Structures are given as structure tokens and as C-alpha cells.
Length: 188
Image (cartoon, rainbow, N blue to C red; front, side, top):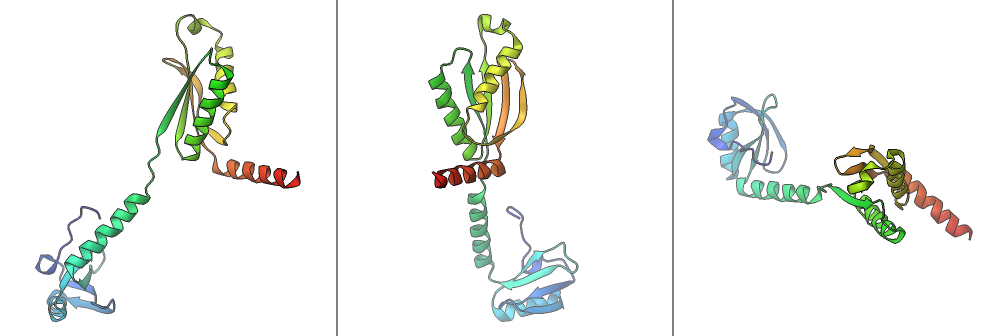
């Protein structure tokens, strides 16, 4: 409905309309001429708000005010939409424990924000020839360090640069984890 042009007054083509009055009351099914006359008496416009209904629904309202309210609702709806991205974290075979912990913490932050995380084990040079089982375990070991509940969206597979897997947050598991941590903390 964002860019849809509404028909007003003489642009309306329907012969009969279900009309909603200026105060929001239902005026019933009226002919187009009767509806236009009612809008003229009220000193405002007749707007076809639901052209696909049978008969189409029209409302007697000030067009400028109607458009303003509609644009306000659209802005609010647009502001509530959260864009989810796929963030990427890259580790190497020789990445140290501290660096892995930092990257795991960052991945957890992204998961908490609702993003997907693509974890990649980057291989170059002689590392490309290493045992695949070892390399997969290295990446999976990194994934287990992430302190946020997640589910595997795409399992660890070979990628052009090495091995990669995609994870996304698991809200139910995270809520359970937080509840367990809270009860453990209360029992101490």
C-alpha cells in the first residue's frame, strides 16, 4: 500500500460503494453519486480505501490528513523492521587461544543482535594439504567456544578459502541457558 495511488472523489469507478462516514460510522452501501454528495456535505473527500472488496469500501475523510496518517504509520512500521545480515569471522590454523576467545565473543554479540555468523577457517599455503578431519575439528572447536546458544544453519563444508559453516541464534536454547545460569547463581 506504500506507493499505491488511492482513487479519490471522481476518480472512483465503482457504481456502488460500502461507505464509512466522517465520524467512522457505517453508512452502508451507497451509489457513487450518494457517496460523493455525502462527502461534499461534510466538506471533505471520498477515498476508495479497499478497491478489491465487493462492493469496494470508501471512506469520507480529509485526503491530506488521511495521507499524513498513512505515511506516519508506514514510517513507524519501517523503523521496526530489523535488517539481519550474515557477519563473518575468520580464523586460521595458528590462531591463538586469546584471539579465538575474542572472536568467539564478537560472534556471540552478533548472534545476540539477530545476525547470522559465517565462521571460516582460512587456509593458505601448506595448510591446504592438511588432514581435512583435523581442519574441520579445528573450526568446530572454535564454534564450541561461542558463549551464545546457536543452531547450525549450514554445516561445516569446504569453501574456496578453506572450511566454513554458518550459524544462527537459537532463542529457545539461549533462554534455557540463561535460566539455568540464574538458578545456579541463586543456589550458590
